[in-house]
Length: 231
Image (tube, rainbow, N blue to C red; front, side):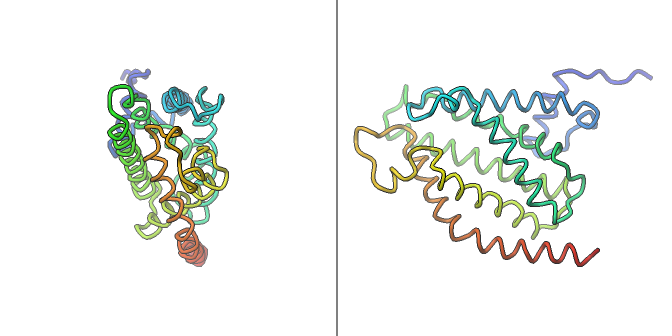
């Protein structure tokens, strides 16, 4: 019996399956390098598109390098932080591939809405893009941890929200968007851009994360204790 052919079409179809909350084909295990290369390529393109018209971005962000480095760091954080909860099929490779395959929705950020919309409408559109992409990816992480990693619903909630709150707080402290504290201090009229409303949402998330992280940290400690007590 002839084995089914494998190519870029198979990888793209499986990426679409993941984005629509369906399990990928078994080919992802045998050809994981192809899936990782595909995911990193999409991540890089999304990173370039996100910052191509942003005057506040640095050179490495314009080159898309920030997005590539980010997925490696995010995968590492999730892999290390959630390992004590004893998820199924848990490896850095699997987490990294999943994270990169969730990159395509970020192409919404590359749409230059400010070129054909008034500034207030462009700000609203970018805020909606941010909300849609963020909620989509969080929902995918819920699905991944529940369906593929086999965690309980309570563990899924904590395992999803604790890393996200820690990441938001860290990005805020490092001020990687170059504007978070400017918004806190007040943006001058000449500094306004189509991304300001989106950045404002990030500031609100930062405030929420600062207060929520300790709470989720307490639940996380309890879940780790319970997972170890079962051994």
